[in-house]
Amino acid sequence: MWIDVTFVSWSVRHDAGGKARSSVPARSCLRRHEVTRLRECAGMGVNRTLGFAGSVAIALGGVSAGALPQHDPFGHWPLIRELRTFPLAGVACTYFGLALLCGAWLRMRPTVDGQRPADLVRTMLCWAAPLALTAPMFSRDVYSYLAQGEMVRRGLDAYRWGPSSLGGPLALNVPAIWQDTPAPYGPVFLRCASAILAVTGEHTIAGVWAMRLVALTGVALVVACLPGLAARFGVPAQRALWFGALNPLLLLHLVAGAHNDALMVGLLAAGLLAAVRDRPLLAAALIVAAALVKAPAILALITVVALSRGRTLALIRTAVGAALAFVALQAASGLGLGWIAALHTPTTVRNGLSLSTDIGMLLAEAGHPSAMAVIRLAAAALGCALAGWALLRAPNPAAGLGLALGAIVLCGPVVHPWYLLWPIVPIAAGMQHPPPAAIRLTVGVAMFLLPFGAPGYPEAVVAAIFGTVAGVLYLRLRPPVPALVPAT
Image 1 (cartoon, helix red, strand yellow):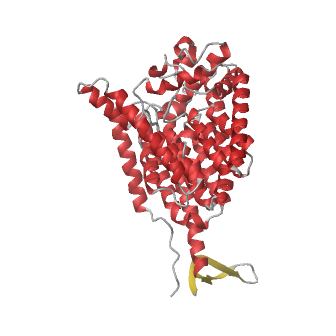
Image 2 (cartoon, rainbow, N blue to C red; image 1 turned 45 degrees about the horizontal axis):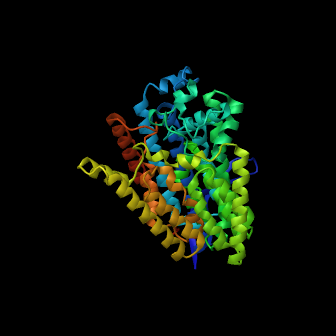
Image 3 (cartoon, helix red, strand yellow; image 1 turned 120 degrees about the vertical axis):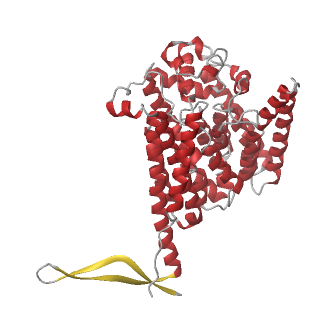
């Protein structure tokens, strides 16, 4: 079937003297699939611009309302100083941008199959660039990374002492709840942090930029590995990149927040790609490296075995590769095994989200002091059971790993928004269509944290609501895709 379409463009003719003498509308007959392609291209351009505007608004909000250091060397600049006199405006601007970014991401979904993977990567870079240039946002964890890296550099045991034992400007930026808690991160990450501090010293801003560069390296690994992983499981690369790389949580917490989860997820993606290419030794080594950043990545070793040819031989090779990598990395770090005992650190303070912890606290306040431990233990058992079920019953090993990690996160004693990024790569690569609940959860959690990374006060919550409503109204007033008008 042919469809006659009139475009807004015009052709201009010129006479012998070079003057324009007439303009006529240019007409073209296109097949229906070509019209669909034009709509998809137009929609991609509009959504890319919309998401970029959202990222710029978030970045501008971060200048005044981000997780700023105690002593900011840019605070004396006239424009920066003026912006920081209105932190509530920064909160509203951030949430306006969050609404635009999430709206652009959701609007892109129906037409993503018609796009080229390279176009989606360009869109991701466009959205990430403003967030990579602003202050740390939605969390102050990057300052803990710097303090712990300096502790390792000075020979202090970061798995025994908290940043308060360090003192100085780096420890001053760490939130009070983490001042006396040991580092819950693996030795690979702490050695990476100490190497950064050996270069940047106590210059906070330089250290933040270096930590963000490490996080961007992890994000780059995710983007590079996703298409190859998706191809192995018959998932279009466009869908995998949409859910895995363009995901607002990744942009907000790995790019803007500079969380070390980026390095864990990037190494995890590289390990899974090595596994699908039947390189179990390399895959196991990369997975162990990811687990020595954050321990939950170790679950992916099961997936490495499942993806390799010849289960018995694959099991042996994976076990050997994992053991050799663990011994080599652990010995190279020189930090001992104290990180294993420190894994409980996030549970020692009330921080983040967790249904099991909230229920336990309510029961404890009602006169059942042992309820917290019992509820957490029951939730952990439920998470393990759901993880095992997912690994056995999922349509493929990647989807099983993603669902298993998701179950462990949601049933855990502490749930931070960036923890939801652990299952993002296997779900994006292993599932034809991400679960609708995962998409809704992504958007809901993206709007959960305030930009300064601390509990909100009433005025900031009101400003966040105002910015969100303004963003939603703007999305309602702007059509998703510009219409191509058929000629009569």
